[in-house]
Image (tube, rainbow over all chains, first blue to last red; front, top):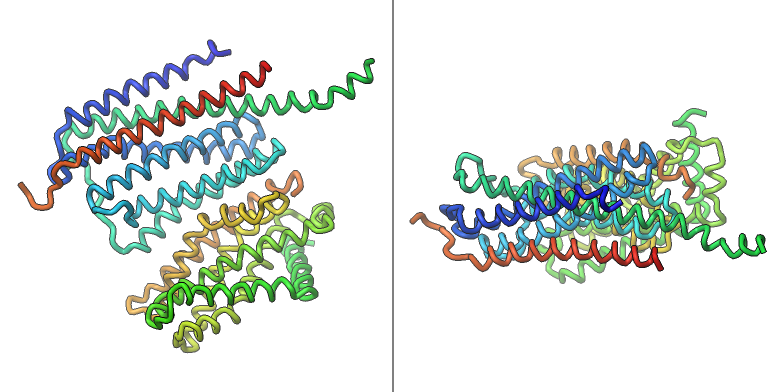
Length: 233
Length: 228
Length: 44
């Protein structure tokens, strides 16, 4: 079985390699930005994390719909894996954003649209996993995880627009034409690097979930085994 | 019986239960009033500060009271396993959801006539009749927005051991748009609205309510298909 | 040099990169541990 699934280790290793290359270019080759100086180099991990966190949450949403539709355990495992990996990337995003805020605005936290939205997003999906951990019945756990994931994901655009209105002040997003080519390269490389690493993490997490579920199904008859054994005797 | 008729039957049943045992409404109301009182102690006796924060405190009192009301609404059904009987009846789960959501919305709306005057007095805010009418409209929209996901999650968590923790944990981050919209618009009503922004916040509250009334209505039958 | 330029700040960059690396590693490690724990349970 492990030999059959070697492809994901390959993707994980590729992601790791790309992360090294992209970060090397971002840290040592790319020029420092005109206004932000060296601090701008945080962007080469920050932006890829942001893109991939959103992408992985969106995958969780899609998997949740399929899981609700088909009731197949593998889609439940995929939903859980995507939600959990999304939370990991989202947490990294928050820490990087906080460091960024400290370096540029002098405070550890700023009620910036994206920073605030990502914090709320983290809480939303952490709630999904919390709910999941309290449900013992496997098929109900799958259904409820899917429902909570859908409900949480639909909230994300609402939260984004709401925070934008709530903060009348919002900063200008960097436009592509002001970015030097040597800044785009590490950004793109790292985007794919984090994507591949996220895929590797999701496959590992999903497999763990499937293994657990299989064990639950196996251990159920085992617990009943003494009754069957006494009948045989 | 059609869907609407069924839903209204559920509402009537809930209101009847509420009327017979007024305990829930009264205790949630008391809770709301106590919260409003506590907020003023947290800020101190500075009346300008209190007036500026009055809208936020009022909406927070609604939000905190709502989790109590919502979790009670399904705990009632769990007692003596009434929910099992309810699910055995030929009631469409969608009708059950909308009935429950509507009665929860009505329940939260009932908090307004008590909490609003208390807040106005405690935080010394002046409000004319027109402002009061707009405030009640906004309160209704907020109540509808809170009830839609709240009813779904209350149903799901009602049999779990840690419902009291889980329901706010799931609901509070989710209803942040409702909280922001209601706080902003009600604060504008209380302190004056020079840019006439209340309309857009009301639109936000309305769209949240519409989105979650439809979405949770679709999801609720799945949530209870294996019983709750 | 234009006004408002941030000078230095390498320590912030280093902090951001190392926290990212540490976070990814920690999660990968936890995945490996959880899978290993599961495997030993299954065998045991």
